[in-house]
Image (tube, rainbow, N blue to C red; front, side, top):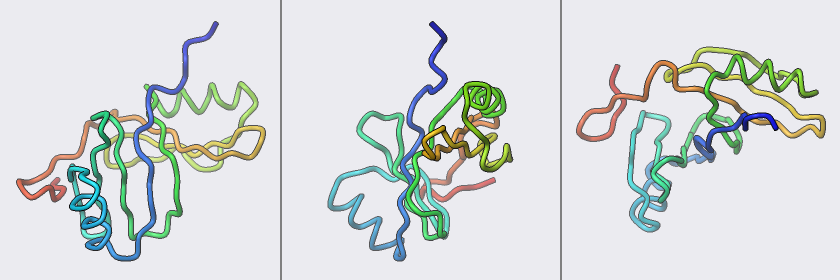
Length: 128
């Protein structure tokens, strides 16, 4: 049996039109801890300490991002298995990303953290 391609759920991304209201809802009312933020988005910790909820004011729609060892290698394996590449691979702040589609038209976002995790200041804002 082949080794599992997917390592963990990196995040679920939720589109929001008001980031401050969304932070109040998810952090203050539902108890999720702020991990990082920018002017248009924020990452919040799931209880498992691995997965994030990403709130985004950019028009992404809702998506599930899956962590893999290598986005490029995972995309190759996905295509060999019968899936297709929709976009990428492309660079993201923490590594590489590729959008794939399985034979039933389900889209998944595969990403790796080959560049390392985001660095933040004491208020959680992403710094370079």
